[in-house]
Amino acid sequence: MKLQSQISREYKEHKYEKFWVVIPHKVIHALGWKTGHGLKVEAKGDKIVIEKEGE
Image 1: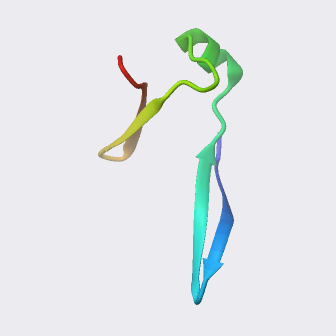
Image 2: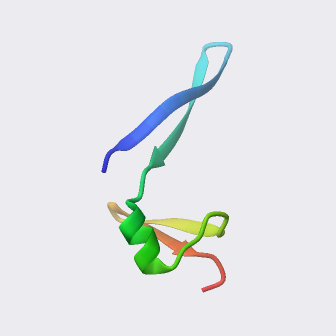
């Protein structure tokens, strides 16, 4: 996996980026996640923890 980004907009001298990581289908399937589920993200040290909301 790789961190990907693109410029979402430019305002005056600032460029604003969006970032995303593509999670393999087999991981999503193993977790039982579906398109549209709410997710929460938290930085812990040098790691990112992503959890389904309400769990």
